[in-house]
Each structure stands twice: as structure tokens, then as C-alpha cells.
Image (cartoon, rainbow, N blue to C red; front, side, top):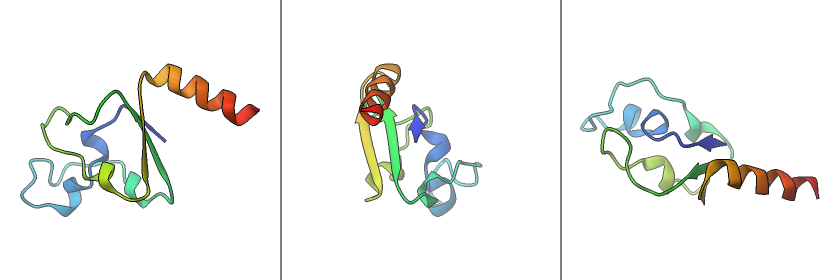
Length: 79
């Protein structure tokens, strides 16, 4: 589960030599079996680069306020 991260989870940093992120150390979130990203929008991060992770078939997006979203998710899991 990723909360609000963008550039530091973008696989372009290791896969796309033309990306301004290329060579930057990242969290290799794309290696997980399932990915849940909590964000307010699909807007690019500081580098202005679209995050390839968000188009990965294993990635699920949960849009909204992270605290509110997590509270609702935890409540659902408890019930």
C-alpha cells in the first residue's frame, strides 16, 4: 500500500532511459503481488512525469483523502 508517493515509486526510474527520473533510487512497488495507491488525483509528481505504476494491471487506485480512505478501509476489514 502506497500513500501519496509518486516519483519515488515510478518504474520509469529503472526502465526508461529517456525519463528525467532514470537512475533515481525508487521503492520497487511494482514487484508486489498487488498494489494499492492512495492519492488525491492522477496528477504527476514533482518531476512532472506520469507514473507508469498507475497503469500496471496489479495496481488499484483509491482516490481521496488518505486518512479518511484508510479509516474506511480498516473499518471495512474489521467488519
